[in-house]
Image 1 (cartoon, rainbow, N blue to C red):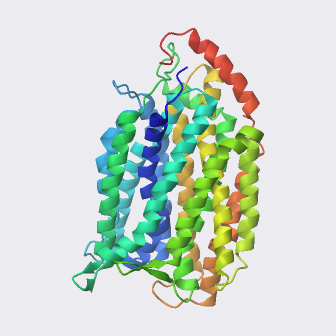
Image 2 (cartoon, helix red, strand yellow):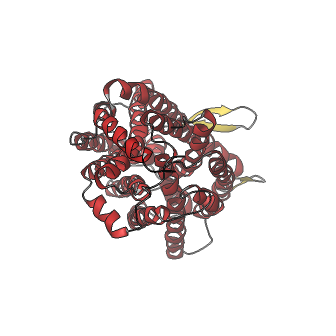
Image 3 (cartoon, rainbow, N blue to C red):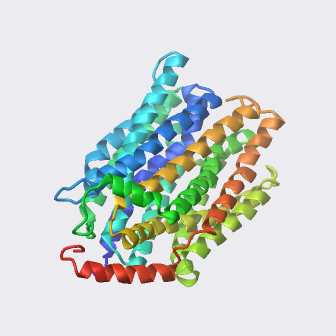
Length: 467
């Protein structure tokens, strides 16, 4: 079995650098963009997120099925990185474009562009995720790949979080006239170009090695039937959804927290550009840096105590820390930033484990059934991401509306309390439920070593199954 080289691991990570740039723009800034720049209400946005993301989540298994049945000289999954890179960038720009329309027409435009963006996101991200399951069958290499993936993912997120607000501020200045709509559109154009380049890099630097069993026939009904019996898949799906609820509510409420709960959002001025660096930017960048620390810690901790125990421990600790966060006042800035750092380490530990465990589930399914449907199984990872993001994003908009939030106005104490809950207690519930799901997950590391050995014996009897 060929050991993966550093160049290929880094190349795989490039793909999530690109995806995470857009993911972070959507999860942190899109709700704020729609309410404070685009000009529609938080309740309308919450409903739009629910409708469009449920539709998009249903596309994930379809994309997984399609990718499993794709056969090209480049493999099953890599071609989509090549084909979808430019549409990915284009629809990102359109999503952050504000047309000169009536409010009702703007809502229609938002629905259409965001829905199309999510379709393209699925078309590139499901094959990208599935690629991990066919690059190698080595368990430690898989965890290493997942770690590389998330180091690059959080690096992409840091790039966006560190530069988005300063870039928007700088690009909004149109010969002395401040035009935030132009600023957001041009900022997204820059990120789109970078994302397309990184997707091309993943395509050229990676290879697919594991093929389905030679005797396997293309049979969608059998693939779905196998998936319906795969209990670990359902458990990990639930854990993934609530992990994303935990993250998306925290991310989506951050700008509101610092803009409306703090008296002043500005931390200091950037030299030369004369652009303010805000507390929200510092807070989010710190969180992504801590996420990277968590990703780095995931492998040694999981090697020592197993993926399942590492996952559960990280989510339980995140639950406790998030509940404590609620009690911090606006003047306790050092505690707010310290707890952001600690909570984000916990979140960073979990994500590479999730993706590595989906690869384990693909092996488990092949071991039990003699059939391999990598794309279909990995599509569930994207689906859980979308569903958690959907519920978290919708809840954020609805809770803001419930507590009486009004964009660009002084907020009532009730609205401020709602914003504080979205930074603490509400995401803590998501983390707690995620850890409860993992109690029932049975694919521990010892069991997977046994499965991997048996699959290796089967594959060695079949020519050209791993190359």
